[in-house]
Image (cartoon, rainbow, N blue to C red; front, side, top):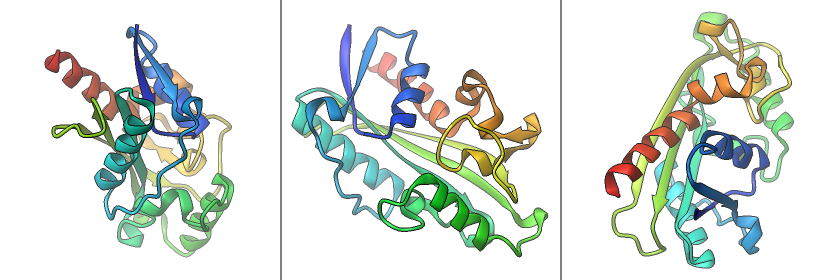
Length: 198
């Protein structure tokens, strides 16, 4: 079984990626198992931040690394919070605070202008100096609700309405969410590219 370090300490993200990779002969270990601190996200794009995280995890673990940078883009806010999604209400703010800040910011925005999408940029690096990292993107379209609904998922899932299922992402069973989500899309593309790379 091959081992890959996941450049994240986010328990929800670790769980979601392990669920998606469960069928493969890959053991995904969170970077916390190697006492790796989260790297400062100084990039201006999702892909820059994902590369920073993957490089840091590969360098400190000696293993290949997967990292993603993801967030929610709201059209009425010109794509915000974007790369700042995890710290929208401030550095270290819990998911609930970020979610409530977004709802507050959108309180006067009508339903027809509450379109949004989750973006995920996922990077795989064979080692810290990999000159050709694999980079995959997933996008999931939805609408921001007016209140949180559902107990599953994490982050902005309780306010991300999925029209084709008539519920929020947090109301979907994990296997359904993983088949639709931005992270699931990016990870499946990554697995496909890893297979082609051999």
